[in-house]
Picture 1 (tube, rainbow, N blue to C red):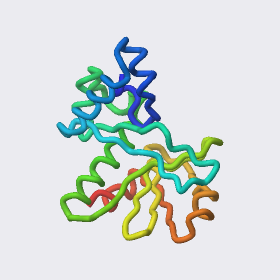
Picture 2 (picture 1 turned 120 degrees about the horizontal axis):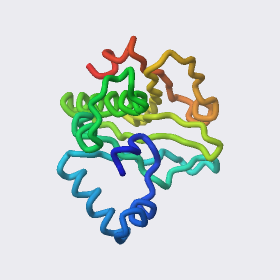
Picture 3 (picture 1 turned 135 degrees about the horizontal axis):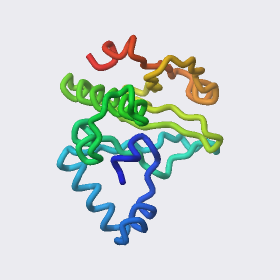
Length: 169
């Protein structure tokens, strides 16, 4: 179930109900998968602004191949319905690996408001916030005005197939 929901908010209670197990059991399994470096979580970024939503985490796989094996889908990207989610997962996981290898101390989050404005990845490093949106297909993306106004020294960038290499190297 988790593999089909990469990049989405995950409710532990919903997973527990669907699997007919206790919520604490689901939490322990997710913790175990994180400790074994199969998945990692992002939590919502919030500085207590009324509109920010930060309750449910999002989970990603360190390796898209593991995720694809779990759901038995190795089709080409041009025939898949999850290409955008795979792209987001790939970019975030590879960027985090790069930061780890280079010794960067970074906190990672996602940002979302109750009125459905969101940023896929927020990095907080040395008190500076950087927002990133990941797009596989060519789409114009406007930076969320609320984020840039609320967090004055922040930046925003869209990561596409044209500029992704600079993001992960």
